[in-house]
Length: 263
Image (cartoon, rainbow, N blue to C red; front, side, top):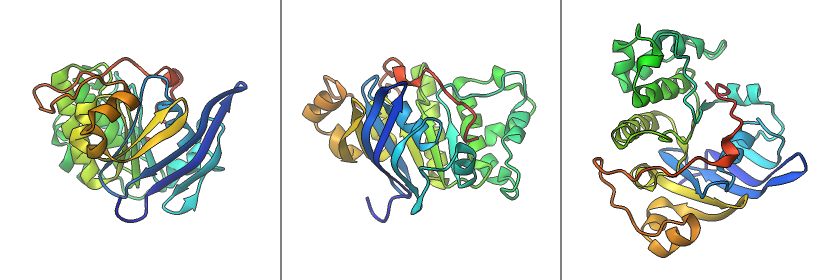
C-alpha cells in the first residue's frame, strides 16, 4: 500500500453480551481504490464494519486520516466523512429516487454533490421520479452508493453489495463500485471473489474475529493454497463479466443492521 492508510484499525475488540466477537482486528484501508474485507461466514466482517461505525461497543484504535475515532459516537463519525451502504441497500421502496437521495443530504455538509452522483450514475438522474422499489438490484445499489457520495465523504463502506443478486446484476454492481471508487476510497465487505479480484487492490482476511492475512488482493487470490486455507475456496474461479462467482450465503454476524447510519 503506497502512502498512509486512510483508515487504520488496530487491535479492535468487540464484546457483546459477554461474548467476544472480535479479538483483535487489524485493518488498513488504502487512500484510493478498493480495499476488501474477506473471510468465511461468521468470521466477524460485518461486526468489524459496525465497530468502525461505532454501532457496537468496541475497544482498540480506529484512526481516520490520522485522527483517533474509537470513542466517537456514530453521528460524529458520519460527520467526519464515513458513508455506509448497508447489506440490504436500505432504500425506501415507496419513495422516488430523487426523494431517497434528498433524505441523505446532511445539514452542514455543504452543497450536496448531485453533479458528481449524476456524473457517475446518470441513470439516477434519468429515473429521478421512479419509485426506488421498482428499480433493479443494481440500480438500487446505485442509490445506496449515490447517497454516500452526496455529502463529500472521505470513505465509503459497502457491506455485501452483491448478496442475493443474480450474476447479471452482480456485473452491474461491479460497474457501480468501480465508478464510485474513482471518486472516494471504498472498504468492500464481500464474499464474491471474482468481484474482489476485479476491484480490490488490497485486502484483509478475518477468521474467528482476528485478522489472519493482510496484503495485495491479487497476491492472495493468485495462490490457490492460501485461498483454500483462508477462505475455504477449493478452486480458482476465472473472472469474467459474464460468469462472476456466485456469492455464498450470508454472514451470521450481519443479523442486526443499522442500515442508514452513514448515508
